[in-house]
Amino acid sequence: MNGRNRRPPSACRPQTTRTLGMHLLRGMLQSKNAYSPNSMDSLPRQLASMWAFGNVTHLPVPDIDRTDFLLIVGANPVVTQGSVLTAPGMGSRIRAIQARGGKVVVIDPRRSETAAVADVHHFVQPGTDALLLMAMLHVVFARHLADPHPRAEGVDRLRDAVRAFSPERVAGTVGIDAAAIVELAVGFARAERAVAYGRLGTCVRRFGALTTCLLDALNTVSGNLDRPGGAMFATPAFDLAGLARLAGQSGSFDRFRSRSGLPETNGELPVAAMADEIEEPGPRQMRALVCHAGNPASSLPNRDRTERALGSLELLVSIDLYVNETSRFADYILPTTVGLERGSYPVVFGALAARDFAKRTRPLLTPPPGVRDSWAVLLELSRRILSRRGLAGRAGAALLGTAESFPDRMLSAGLRLGPHRITGRALDESPHGIDLGPLRPRLDAILGNRGVTLLPEPVAADVACLAG
Image (tube, rainbow, N blue to C red; front, side):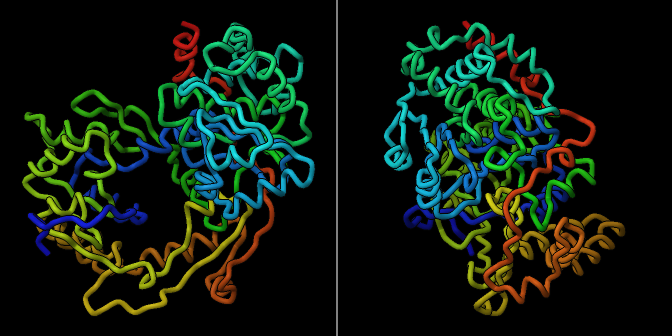
């Protein structure tokens, strides 16, 4: 389907990408130009996990169903139903905390839907979350309320770093009275079970990585890491983090850079570099783009420049169901199956769950003849590229031709090898899913021989910037 000069309908929400297929296609293209929404969303969270816990996939989850004190910083879970947190019915869960005598505190510069149902809402000045968290840690140490996890490393370094950030010093900047900061920090540290949770508001700003590391540090030094009611780690049936550890994959940062000097993270460049890479002439200029289930013309900053860059490409292939703001520039649009025509298993969301579970959905509808799942489309593109690369390439292409069912086989193997040893038959016999119980402590298994780094070196320099 040719998409150029087609008029776009209203913006639509992109579907989840088939990451494995995109990595395969990228390998066939031998390109370092890979982009995803991560750099506009959860990148600081992933970096903080890599630096603090040793792997980008080790994402702490607030145990909201057992906590007594929920501190929400820069997040609106009543609307999002959890973000980097799989917890539907967040409104009910917050009310349950309050019903059992717990407390919910929101730190947000606006009165969000979550702030409206919280016990306390502190209006913070935008961009000052890191200062507030430094002041809270200052109080925890100064009042001798610290109870660090035994695996914590760098406690003295963190104590020294926060010493200059007293509540009295930061109050005017953050917009919260010093007495209120002290009350918040003491209440959090003295709660039986407390957890601090931050999301988009703590990530998409200056000092996002530092702010996220400080949230982890607050949970760790208050004794609330890896314990019921605190910040815990899911034990998913399909343990993606465990497979990453076995493969020796912990994540990466700054292995290479864009031509404009921006560092990669986990093999991807920031989307802020994409228009530069397309428009700036010279070696490695990007002249072709495969866009899968995304709409960068609508979602990236500087829409006018992004549209101009997309329109200048020599080739744009859009794998999508719709003609939208991006695919209207496409030379080819490759539509795929719709949601009810394909099954799914939430590998990523299972790793972020507030309660462990396993659930697989089967397709409800049969797709029309010739319509493929996005994985099959990406696989076929990779196969055709490989088939043009001599005898070895043709042999590899023939092998890929047998791989269309690989995701199903990978899922079955991952579930059997996972911590719960679940079979496909067990999933099929439980169409509403299998409840695997509440989160359980597992930090020792996650860390191996390393500890929890409280103030990672890459963000330590930011502390001096805050002090200035």
